[in-house]
Length: 324
Image (cartoon, rainbow, N blue to C red):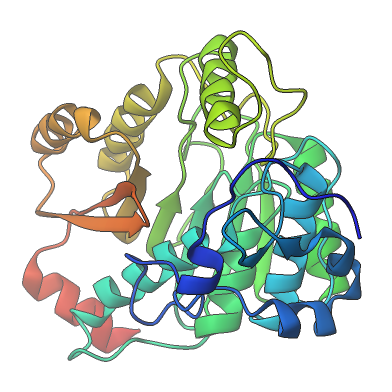
């Protein structure tokens, strides 16, 4: 067995993950026996942490990727998933949570019932090489996805995953070459029930490195000034940072959505920093959104939120649901 880290990984592996959506299959914690049975490559990374619970070393990128692969396979039925070193390898439970909250949002206009099947179409802005949102959303609800990205190499990796799982009919990937989020990407007449986005969090590579250092310290891997050798969840420019950071990206997303108000029933984005919320709400007011929702999200002590807005009236949203 691979030696365990000196750090104390989250004890939630055994106790569950408080704050996750009630339908999220990961909220009860990880069943490592079942995960290892379905994905034997996870076995070398599993062992007792300092709490005595079965876990992995979350500071080890290889362990994190092996856990993701096992979760996608055992819980979501994704038989083939792999990404190159350096690509963003996000935690699957949080990605699943976003999707479950969006399902509840659609249910509001559907007599409380979550719509399933390919009639629901979702735009994933910044799909990345990992293509996790479309994989989990398609497996859970049967929705169709269009994933966009500005990185051709990332899309090539994602396309390989989609093809290996036989999902090319329900998950489409598209390169965005224009200096825009929507312009130049969408085709005439396209419409979506939802758009979703996990925007770049940091404003610069230096900010991203500082955030990684804090995470590394929290995992017990040395003090301040001792740089981490790698990012345990990976990521690079465009995935982790952009000019102005999260706040600027979300304001831009809102401004561009105003140009295509009829294209999407609900535009949504994650917003990690609560301090960015007042500026986002001002942007929504300026964009004259008909309705907006702030949907709290949590995973243990980590607090986040989904910002959702629409340019459709209540009556128009009800009509959309009846026609789809």
